Length: 407
Image (cartoon, rainbow, N blue to C red; front, side):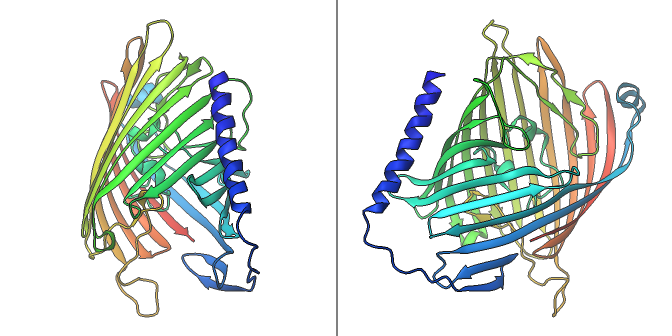
């Protein structure tokens, strides 16, 4: 615990020192605070010198699923039922003030009450430090997790993502190097609830990620992305992993139950290649539990998928986040000129193994086929077929679709 406090104090001291260094600069020039409004994938307000920028955004993901399990699976989990839900219904405001102060607040109303998603502030482009972010945001681990749900190739992230931490409250230092060809991020986090709150002396995590672009041509039409991440998680004496097949409306088919663990060590590796309209992406995640009793367990998961744009587009890469971003059709379907939009075919295989004595959480394998129609840069319709195989316990067939708009 002493070490955690020392790390936190050091990070705060770095932040204060950087701020003091800025105060030695010459007197501030008078800011131009006249705003202009324009549409850039959302309503954006900015001053002419871009020292002040604000963007209003949101997303609606409406999902429908039709599921059928075999007799063995139904006996264990009950009959799988069709359903519909608003998977996400979010509003967000983000921006930059005085060139260096960033902020973002994002609320999700899909559960019927407002819960935090992103809720942070930060300082950018600090001398000798880079960028500092404080608040609730995604921990730097996982290529699939770092991409916004607006831009994922499939409706749900892979089975392996069950082992990957998502948004927690923390402090992170991050930077891009070598013309944004290399990125790194490291931070300390607390496991928090839906409003960013946590109490107690446990549930700290130290998480870091490094990525590189050894090959990057034609503004990302051809690229190779490689990355590795690590997280050391100090738990409150127990932990649990569980996951659904790759649809949110299905029950959780694999589950370790609550098991004793003083700490967890997570290692993630990631790779992606884009070659024009074709792409491949893969990740592997391994977890070791430290029980302090010698009865440690290990779990792992992986996926690999390929996609192809029939209409010739390519996956867009955002170097500032070291993740994939928005697809822009060559000719939007909903536009003045009219066109076919962008059509993408994709197939994925993923596996999650939660079996390691004395824990028997099960093994789940999914084959997922996807068809995506991007009407324009801000809307798409997705169709996914999932074949889920719970080892020795049955199979399920799932067809689902999503109607999406985001800005």
